[in-house]
Image (tube, rainbow, N blue to C red):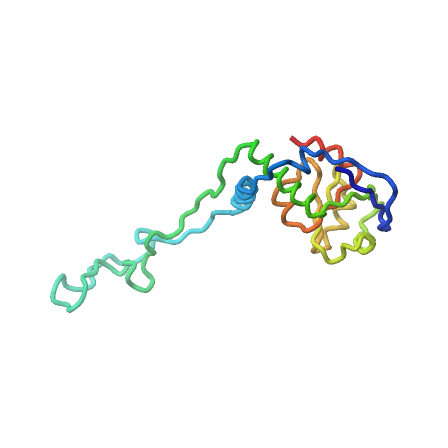
Length: 208
């Protein structure tokens, strides 16, 4: 598939780039693979440090509260019973790791599927490389305005690390940046528009 290359003024440069159909136009996008990859990404971000004290972990007397029978109600052991206010919690949450294993081939299929969905919906745009001598947030906002993407959530894909460009995007709540080698399914789907720099096309075309 071919896409036109736009400059930072939002004008068509007349150049075109070819996107690999094996990455951006696969025959059968797999929604379940996409689901699994997104689920793993979000699960790996969870801290899993939740904890509630159970009956054996709280401070309290083990003195028997009343006689065994004849009290007119149920029999209780001690004040740490889960039935009382301040007692231990029954089957409370414990620290755990939510991460799980996902095969590399499944993750690759999910990423190709996500990029295919974006390509089918015309949500991929190729722009010429952007170079900032210093962080310039206002200038980047002007670029999005020229491209008629102002206010839309977008992901800028770069060939490599660009510190000044990263710092320029950091204060824009609707913009995210990632290198072509680090792009993943969640980042693709979490943004409405994918802005691909011209120099990063080769890296995307060679994704495994």
